[in-house]
Length: 272
Ligand code: DGL
Image 1 (cartoon, rainbow, N blue to C red):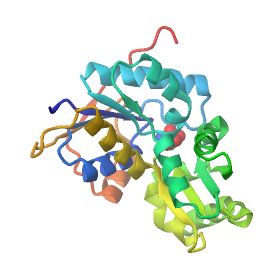
Image 2 (cartoon, helix red, strand yellow):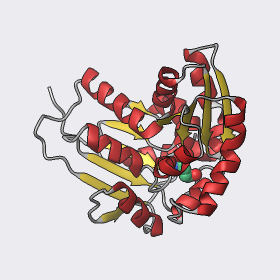
Image 3 (cartoon, helix red, strand yellow):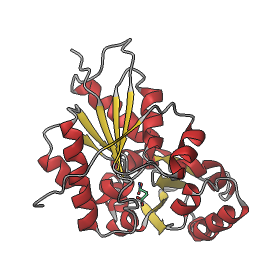
Image 4 (cartoon, rainbow, N blue to C red):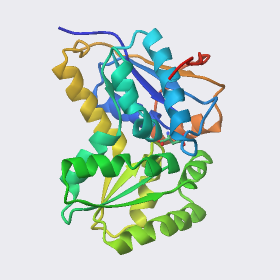
């Protein structure tokens, strides 16, 4: 059995293309429909109820595109909206938190994991909850890094100022003794070199995008939803507002072939 319908991926903006990149590498036969909420980005500083509402509106648009599964590429949206979406959507839905937590536990040797993300993600405590549910003994040190997203969107991926900001955020986590760090934000894989430089060699990095792609692959196989082998897969990209400069930063950094970008209007959810 095979299924040619696209995988629907959504994010607050274009940062979720890190997840698309990982999906295309791992699942080259799958069609992907990506929806970025550029009209309302960033989600990371907004309240949980607002992010949940936006996430419902984004998945409504994806369902209208006849997607076979929904991937919440955004960590902030995964952190607060996954339970609601699992309850209401008729298609399977996967977020980035659980796959990231599982990979972190597989990587840690001293059972002390660091997590970095937006304020919404860290405040939700979603990574801690998931990590502790899988291993009650694990120690978690979490830190919100709100300055990183704007620096990445500016394209300052290799920059002295970015290095200093990273050192300031990560210094206390290193001091506390983490041996594994979860990059709990769509954008952070773009800073992987700068973040690695700021950490002792012994600290392992967990990229939530790659681990999410592996979870999607497993889900498709188990649910008989995979596209046929040899399918010439397409990537469609739609945004809720005109793309800004970050689309070219992401395109360059990720070396993704992005064709014409479509526009979609958000239909507001009437009730939660
Ligand atoms: N996509 C968001 C995340 O992964 C980062 C950007 C934002 O704040 O919207 O948390």
